[in-house]
Length: 165
Image (cartoon, rainbow, N blue to C red; front, side):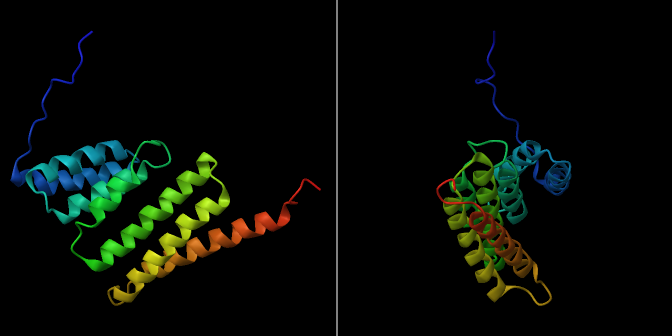
């Protein structure tokens, strides 16, 4: 059986980048984050500072947190530091942390551990709120979603007896 480890990757052309990014977004919307991830990586090979490709890669990686447990929060955070816009950097850090928390909760991580990730996400959304563009309340909407999640978790904890009573 042949392995494909020896096969190199082909490089796309600079003029194909805009169309490639559109295609990557389409794959994300079709819930095919692996395809979007691959496209973003191809763009970043020839345009390492392409902000749209960096963001697409971050989102494609975080889209996979629920299904691919090996996907690294660390890689997404490292990529986020390459975003030049402080709002995007803070906002998408919050999105990434929130998605990580949801994935960890689904994996069965204790609620108190997940709460820490949610609180970190909320802190990032607050940071984004301070530098958000006029008329953009996305960070507030995400913060509220996280707050409601924490409320739900706290209500569920209060409903359960501590020692099986």
